[in-house]
Length: 285
Image 1 (cartoon, helix red, strand yellow):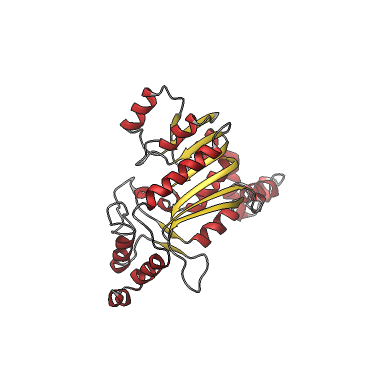
Image 2 (tube, one colour; image 1 turned 120 degrees about the vertical axis):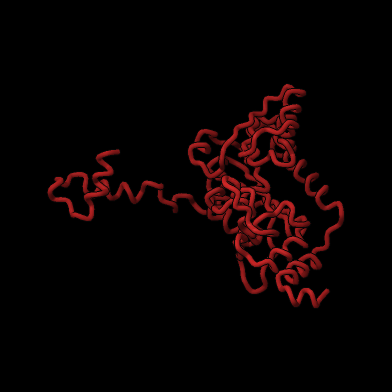
């Protein structure tokens, strides 16, 4: 075993983390029991959105939030509603709303409004732009966020490490496949990237350490209050609105509007030649 780890350092790193925090066969049952407990604690009397809660669970936590007395329940997901979701919705005469959209899409996020409780598990590592998605999740949040992710173990000597999965060599893929439960669910990480058109988000894009996740949340305006590391590869975080002030980030049109204001009163024949193209764009917009 140690010879194999010496030949594949990634496998050795992952196995070492697993030896330091052994897990039992019931670990995922315990994780989901804790998630249900959190929903029962957070949802009553509050608005609740589950972002990405269709795949594999068909809206289970959104339905639970509704049963616990949430004032508004939304399941926001890129997926079509599953047959199981539709059947349960009909059977219980549920008021859970399914809104289909992309967490990267600013228009879709703006249309959702805000929620007291934002729940999102199993999403960020499927995006090439996890900070962008996390900013959108924070935009939705007025009180509490629960963020759950598959993570990678900390790397000795380096804080806040992240790994871009697409393109990693086969030896790394083999290590991740063994320690994360097989290659079936993990294109990009445990097997080569799936380049099927419109299928990018089915891939794993980023391996994020817990220390990196904490910093990402801080710099998207969140204060962590609870953490649940069920095993070295899965972390749920409960956070409240706080962290760094979001006014550190300029609006998307900040630089463009600086140019517009700079030349707003400049006659056309006195514009610097380098500014003509952009001012023409302003005039035509």
